[in-house]
Image (cartoon, rainbow, N blue to C red):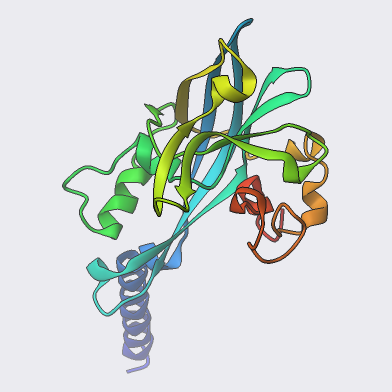
Length: 239
């Protein structure tokens, strides 16, 4: 009996550990946050040649538990900053964080990944160096005066028309910047590069907005283009 008791205790502990390991493996998607770093590069034609800008963003996917794992929804987040393309001295085009799911436009999930869980597994399978092109769903703006957030103007994207009550596509590159300016491409690449924040050097007033709207208030009423500081930069609490 003295020998059998330790064996029984060991067997119970072994079974408990195996059960715990099975639960963790089955529910790993609900315990761990899936992340992807992507580098976005925007190329713009100018009278003096192609001008490019890039930034790295981090996408996160966290499952919201449900009774059935396959029906669980996913909370997606993105952290990083707008892509800033220097077109000329003190003239920038900014591809906003808002205005589209750039990762999912560049890499549409395949038909077999019909559930959220399968979709996240697909994006986790994308290797570093995988490249795609974002063909829709993004917004590009400029500032006629970089020191004035209220001087923001839409260069490229959709804008709501009050008269028609519809969102209309706008391409204002040549109207606002002149002949010879046009968007050439918007490329995305899975990367292991870290997210870096440097847009504050171009738009130092972003810090003073504290996430509020560009006119300095916390409501969208009369806010230029309805934009918040979060369209230009999003950081996690520990960044």
